[in-house]
Length: 122
Image (tube, rainbow, N blue to C red):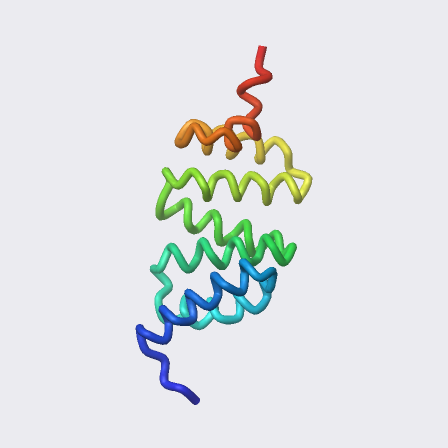
C-alpha cells in the first residue's frame, strides 16, 4: 500500500473536491476519511466531507460534521447555512431557520438572507 504523507493527503483533498464537483460524493467521502484520520483537526477537510455527506443524502453524518466545524469556527457563515439546509432536508424547520439566520447575520450573502426570510418579516 502507498505510504500516506502530508503531500498525499493534499492530493486526496484536491481529488475529493473534484469528485464532489463531478457529483461523486461517496467517492469524495472515501478519500476524505483517510485525510481526516491523519489530520482530525483539519476543518477544511471536515467541511468538505460534510458537504459530501449532504450531497449523498447522508444527513445525520452531514449534521455531525457541520456541527463539529461550527464548534471550531462558530463564525463560519457557510457552515451555518449548510447545517440549516441539512436540518431543512431532515424536516427540522425550526432548527433550520435559526441557522439560516445565523448565517445571514454573519454574512449578508443574498442567498443567506433569502433563506433566513429577513426580507419577509413584518
